[in-house]
Length: 139
Image (cartoon, rainbow, N blue to C red):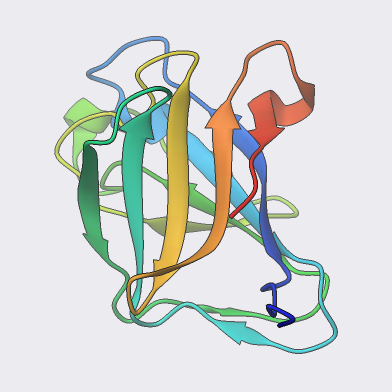
């Protein structure tokens, strides 16, 4: 049996140096496939290497459309909350805010999974010594 793999991948995991500055933490996803990918209804989970327990971070609604070759920066915080700090400037990347109550990346070994209807779309482990802080994992 051949299993289709979604052409979406994590390309950067950027933790915050200060757990109060939620807008200083972000994750960049990229569509490497030939077709658009709509994230509406996608969820994200976080876990730790070696642990089975995972936490659901919520569902993306309304989500966003990733056209082929597009990247999007998923920012942990809320742009309207001053305590979360200044959000990253939208230069070549646009921001999509997750409105989470706390930072997600708890250091090396943090595993992020983007899901659609409960099935993994892409998965990566935070590894600060890797390019973009991403050590790819098999889904």
